[in-house]
Image 1: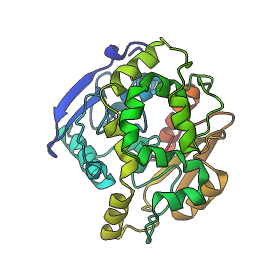
Image 2 (image 1 turned 135 degrees about the vertical axis):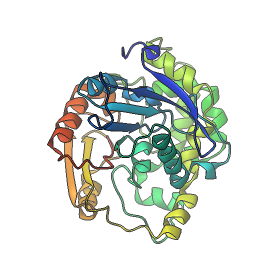
Image 3 (image 1 turned 30 degrees about the vertical axis):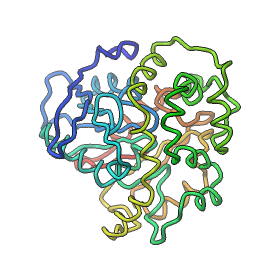
Image 4 (image 1 turned 45 degrees about the vertical axis):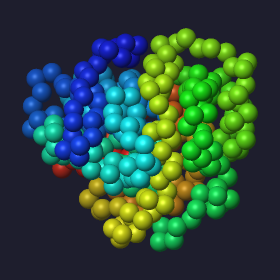
Length: 322
């Protein structure tokens, strides 16, 4: 398991009971015994893939965990339906449950990043309870301007535009181990700013192994990944119909790790989340941003390992956002 060699991981592709095909990494510890070795289900966000967990998979496996890291729907080697309603939380959760059933895993610790944390248990970045009233995205952005970039992603035209400028887009959003990007001045608050930088012909090419991998994987299509931003009404209706409670189950242990430079994780929203979670713990990593698995790879590996060791033998079913 060499992070610089994606092919060194154990790749699998299977058709799930939901009828959808998923590509995933299934890495087993030495002398694997399902009764002794817990499973970590790692769910990536946007715009990522199983490869987002490349620095954690090996260390966690060597510590005795089975690690399953899928390409989520719309990404990489997994199915890529066209309709946005196929990407709702309920359907993604059905896929993940079917994946665990396929692997004969009855319980798992779920670790999510970005959209992956939302799928991990109706948990956003950070957690917000289900809303009884639907707010269209423009109204949400008025209240939370740092989410303004989602207006661009919600527009179906962004799929082809980003696809046409994929190299530039990857350089915009991908951060290196120091948290630096090609466009450090970029603020994902302005819809127009994204279009302007995408069309900037002066963006330097990057030939790193990581960026080459993402260019290849995201080059398979951006419509599916962007569809996650076109599901707000569908998700609201699902949650309303299911009468989801505001509080998480009291028997679930919850760890929230956040970078102090991540604009999606504000102290106010984090403190609000604690009201709805009984077994809550959060860890702030100073000076780091949104891509913690890369920017703070060793800290993430260690913090999660320590948290898992502290849990009792009655393992939780969900962890959440990194």
